[in-house]
Image 1 (cartoon, rainbow, N blue to C red):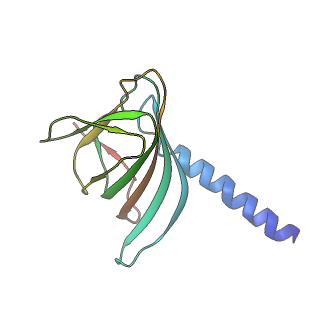
Image 2: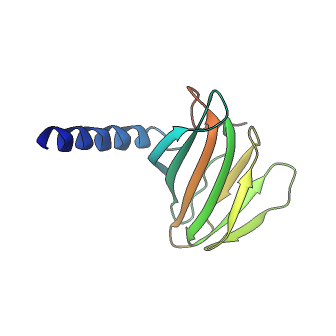
Length: 131
């Protein structure tokens, strides 16, 4: 039993460290809470808690796969290249196709909290800065 608890604790610690690596820019944090294989070879699903601090921007970036996000708390302005800005509030979701340059901007005075599901290529960074 103690060995199982130790393995579980080490697994949580590894997830916490990995989650810290996915911070995008000042004001945006991603904490990975799970990952697993999907039915498409070479891809995995990554589930993360995402927070955009009050007044912060995520910075323009892309993902090596699709992003499906649900806003849990607050409202964010979603800026997707080639589209008009869109406000997404708590209870709403959005989908961003692989490789699409986008940015989240929290224009409010409270943090925005999202759950992000990323179906991405294994072995690639979850997010990459875009010009």
